[in-house]
Length: 350
Image 1 (cartoon, rainbow, N blue to C red):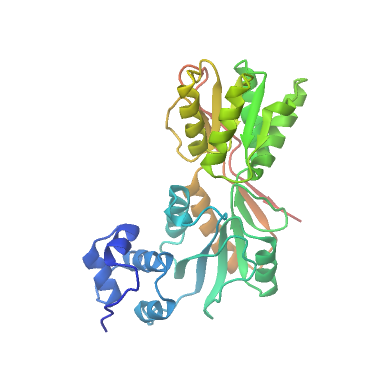
Image 2: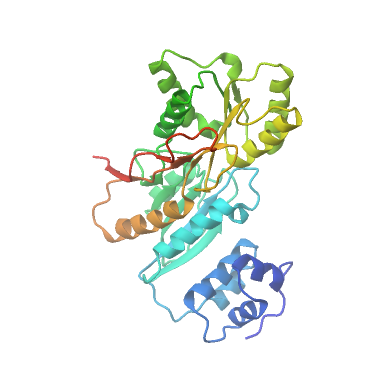
């Protein structure tokens, strides 16, 4: 069988997405032998993400392989995230899931839903487990439960104590970041966040209260989404008011880097004049920004291992697996080297 037409998707697109050559894509499409399972799956995942027709994919997918069960990594993006698996964070997380399932007789696939979707996609009969990534809606989770489909949530931005989660302890992360800033002499802390950062902000508030401090009303500025334009507008207004805090906590590293650029244009030095802090996923990288790093690979890997346990174990009590984050800071501020949050924890809800 030879498939010649790929709609608007060409082999170069697929090859770049899958990290293989165009000839490898061609061999997978035409079901040539000698392609490793992992390479074949990478190409199939790329085809799905790029919108390749599912009925054609079913012809490409080897039919002779029998799987114990199937795991679908189901991406639930924000409205502004049009191609979430193109983002490095989610790409690394998917690699962690894939490696966590390596060597297991398990079928692994990637799917993406529209933001806010409540209805699960149609699953093949053999597919019976789902890893929800990003921002899955309450309705989607409810419908998965009603359909009897095993699932867990992998997210650093939402939390549930009644569902299986692989996550970070955002409240504790806020406490650790606040403690670090206070220990380094920053008492007036400002926040430029989106709604998904509110659990971290709560940790900051509690730690400040322990020291008899509080956040000024003018030092808390909430953006409705993750679009960089909103952060640019907010920091321009803040600078114009000539009342910047001593330290500024920003939602995520790309937004913080944009804020840093604006500050430099106004001759405001970081970290000398203002300490900038953000959350990202590049442990070990040094810059002018104090960063609390999550590890998307470990989030993905631990999700895969937990899903294997969940499907194979009769006991279905929800477990929260907490993956630690690490803090790094510029040499100008760092006195005690790298700080870590608490070790991995697994909490079973009774």
